[in-house]
View 1 (tube, rainbow, N blue to C red):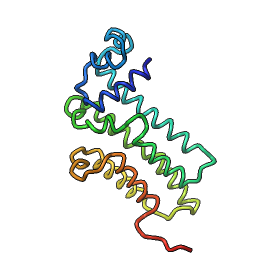
View 2: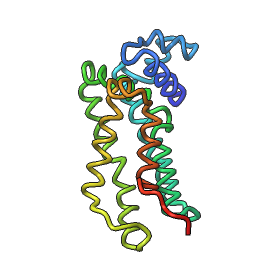
View 3: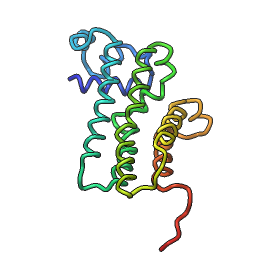
View 4: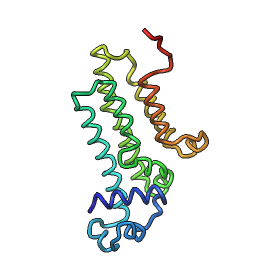
Length: 188
């Protein structure tokens, strides 16, 4: 039941932001508020556990990708980046990050901390690719800075709206630039 609650909470977060009510959630679930409160002590706890659920699912999927020995390093990196926006609708949380900052600053910080550690496994993979001579040597500190700052902008709803791009398309573009660069390669 908890997983169902998390998914419905994400749907409500996507549609209404943090302003949804437990009554809204009960209607989505086809149950009573009392049933919801038998799992959670408060709306705050529902939101916090939903955030935990989202990031735990992303990290579990990422671990599967990174541990899959049938994939090349390039395939792993591509799948890793593709996993970010789609894993249980991270964008539902991101879309209303300003409301999180205003009403739930501790949870906003938790979201940002989780997003920051999302990069650690991919950086280790890239460092392995450099060591194994599969990737060009790069400064991984600068690369992590690029990832963090790009993601920060992609989390900014005003930036996305002004530039008419979605979070998902921004992540895909970042992925393509990282994997394929800017310079056209001549056919061999």
